[in-house]
Each structure stands twice: as C-alpha cells, then as structure tokens.
Length: 458
Ligand code: SF4
Ligand code: SF4
Image (cartoon, rainbow, N blue to C red; front, side):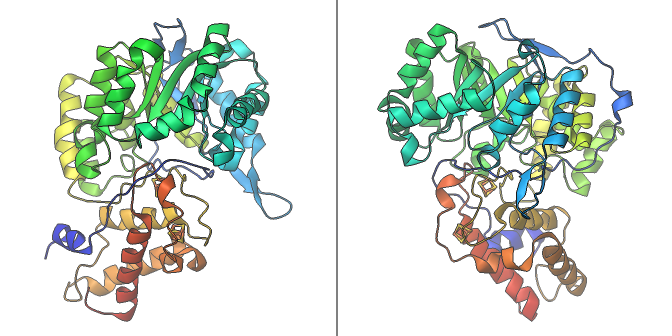
C-alpha cells in the first residue's frame, strides 16, 4: 500500500457545517524566510486603488488575528503590546496601510491591541477593517449588534471604520437573514455608510456557492464595496475538490471581478500549507527561482491578480513581515506561465499529500477540554508532508517513522492537549470555517497514535 492509499484508508480530512466564533492568538506559520529588513527599499510598496473610495491600499494587508502574546504576571497569556507596536510601526514604515481585525480575534483582545498600536500614528496613514462578528446570541439583537459596532469604534480609538465586513457569510441565507437582516444591523450599517462613519461595506465569505450567488444578487440593492474571499493557488481550481463545502477561488474572483467589486484575500498561504511545503514541491519552486521562498511564491501569486485590493497575512513574527515586505516592495507580478505552473503542476503535486485543511485560524479554540486542535492537525499535516507516516508495521522504515511521529507529537502538543482527550462534545464543530469534522478527525488520529504506541498493525 502506498502512502496515498494508506492515508485514504485512514480516512482523515472530512468536513461538516457551521460558522466562526472566538479566535485565539497564536503564532502563524510561514516556513523558511529569507530576507532582512535592510534589503527592503522604503516607499516601494505596491498600492492598489479602490475605485469606490479612491483609497490607495497596500497590496500587503496586516491580518490582526495572530498578534504575539506573552505570559502575564498571573501566568495567563496576554497581548505582547510592545512587540505589536513594533510590528505595526515597521509595517507602516514600509508602506503597509491596511489592518484587518475583528471583535472576536485574539480571544476578543485584538481590536484593543490594534487600536493602541495604530492610534500612535496619524489616522489618515492607515485603513482599519473590522467586522460585525455577531455569532453569539446576545449580539443577535439590534441593540447587541449596535453595541458590538460601537465597542469596535471605542477599542480602535476611531470615529469611523474604513472597511466594515459582515463576518463569515456562507453557511446559509437563513443564517444571513437572522444575523443581519432581522436584527436590522445591515440597515443600520448602510445608514452609517451614508453618514460616512463606515466608508466601505462588504462581507467575508466561507461557504456554499448558492449562498455566494444570492449575495451577488443582492449587489444591485446593497452595493457591496468589497468582498473578502479565501484565495491562493491551491484553492484556485481545487477548493471544492478538497472540501465540498468550499467554492473554487477562480469562481469567486471572476464573479466579483465581473461586477467590479474589489477583492480582499484571506488565507493566501492556506494556513501555512503553501509555505511549509514538502521537499518535492520545494524543489519544483526552487528549480524556477532558487532564491524565492515558498511563501513568496504564494504571495506574489495573489498579488498578480489585478482586482485584488490587498492580501492579508497574519504576521506574528518580524521575519514573516520582512519576508512579505520583500515580496511586495514592489510586487513583481508572476507571468502567465508562472501562474499556470502554480495552479496546475505545483497544486497537483501538493494534492498528492492529502492533509487536513486546517488553516490554523483558531476559530475552534479554546476547546473546553483543553485540546490544541490546530496544533494536533499541524503535527499530522507536517508528518504527511514530510513522509513521516508509517503505513504498515511491514514498512522497512516502520521503527524510524514510528519514533519520529510519536516523539514529534509529544514535542509539539503537550500530552494533556492531545487527541485522546477529545470527548466528542462537538462544541468546536460550528466554529470551523473549513467545515472539518474535528471530533471525527481527533478520533482517527488518536486511534492511529494508539496503534503506533502499541506496535499494532495500522
Ligand atoms: S469535540 Fe473534541 S476537540 Fe471539539 S470541543 Fe469537544 S472535546 Fe474539544
Ligand atoms: S480546525 Fe477549523 S477552526 Fe480550528 S484552527 Fe483549524 S481551520 Fe480553524
């Protein structure tokens, strides 16, 4: 049995239904990085003009869902404001001017930290994007939703929002109706737009094509100023194949472009999957451009589409920011041939390694039973990518691979946070925008780990 058949037999990588909720801050993953700040020219950031507002937006946008944290005096994780300020200062200095946050990012602390860092700079030097993240019942009334919006203004220390999004549309139109229409919050935000306190109104999308089509049909009456979609070279033609709940990015992008609606990109690295690629894929990329990182290929790909206003990256570490600045100061667009190479040859090579489509967004966290859900999936995906999954006890490499998998598991996920602690309560399910069947996957991973531990046939 080859690795692909074995992984199929193991049956990992399924999907279910739901919407997003409270998001934790955790370091993003960008794999190898190659540049230093002194290599980056200032004043060279590529800007894209938003034809609705005339805004000149940096092609690199700052995703504020993965700000660095540190241990506080009481031992609890808190925002590392000093490092956040430093990241924001450097980003602004090199031309990044779009900052995307939400009331639910970083366990509800992102807007506050982002507001502190940004308010140290002139308000006209940056654009703020935030969201109507009314997932919990207390924010699904008009008063509750307005209170959330007003709190965003307060935390961000501003009296207007440049880019306001209805957060995570896509589950169903009934959900859209309940959260935004029945509460009256959509009407309210449209009035705020007329009054100039919301400068651009749009939505972020994760979900079914039928819902997207209905949202597009509403464009004539609502006028979406921009839409945020998941787009990268793997999702361009393969999003639906990887997860039947998702829509290919080529469809979303073309439908938006047809209507002249600017596109904001999320997940340009697909949760790190396009930066930490396996050896074969890396060789394919290096054969074309030896000095370019895998992440840089993915960012340049996104920026090469002209209707992309900005591509968001959740940069926790300075080296990620530097690597991304290197890709975008200025952007050197990919040629048609290079784009096709990524969309076809490289994407097909990556698909030979069917990892779980976790983007490490942390929407499912915290798990009430302490599991490190994205950490467990990250270890599993890493082992698939690096060929560290023994497929049988007869495998000549069995002992070596078994050890590598188990030792790596204990190192990357503390024992108390591993898959065997999942009680299948299903509370995480509704929060995963990728519709991953989290408890089912946990059960399968745990079974696999147990068999490895006991030396049983896989
Ligand atoms: S199903 Fe498992 S992983 Fe999900 S919240 Fe419950 S215990 Fe945590
Ligand atoms: S399992 Fe889903 S919600 Fe949780 S981190 Fe991964 S993609 Fe995000």
